[in-house]
Image 1 (cartoon, rainbow, N blue to C red):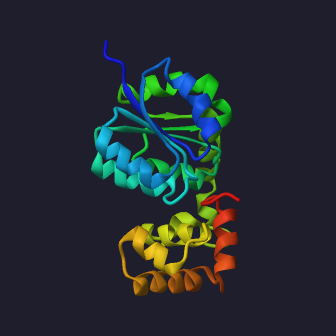
Image 2: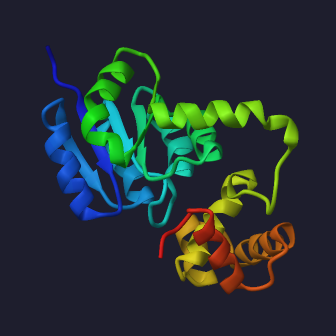
Length: 215
């Protein structure tokens, strides 16, 4: 039986090394990357059977990377392996095309089960997240509380927000996203208006608090 070809993405090299040892028991690791944009490029080049990815990754977060991957490599299955257990993130991950969602704390115990289930065409969600999702569903009628969640932003605004929070300048962001400087400035202004924030420093704190970037 052919071993599945697996591409892995995580912004921590030590985490990647540890996970690789687990994954190599289940398939052939064809590549590892440490940021979301590299993940998209490598996925297009390698066409893996399965992609393991995190949500918090430099240059392009996992949710928006997944949306691109679903279009570019539709035959590749996606499993999120992350620290995030917020129901909003879990929901957005599956909307973006994920077939599985694991938290890193349970990777050793659940990774084999998750990979096997996903490669059979099933979906897998780690039990603690399933419990949280059920609780959220029961309380949907209460409506959203607090500041607008980062998942409510458009993908383009989320990309601009992430790059701003990572310390990139307007010109650099325009180059990375292949858009004009004026367009970046427009999205920056709209982000501040939508989120009722008034500086790049406040946008950065918001992005960190939402788990879009890490300190």
